[in-house]
Length: 67
Image (cartoon, rainbow, N blue to C red; front, side):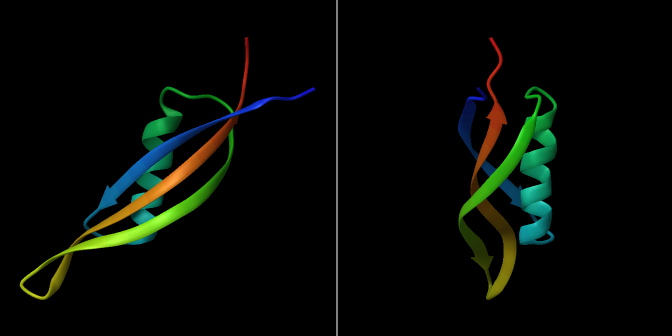
């Protein structure tokens, strides 16, 4: 039987939503093994002077639980 644990992450990028997701996943992978799926919960941006300056993504990452 496989049990998964789910954590919530926030990725931030000045480039794109995709880059924010990759950043969150890459950083989480440094300390968490066996991430096998993500679910993007929300996406939003910070705006300054009418321009997007930061892309933010809330996501949940699932990984296999190990004792």
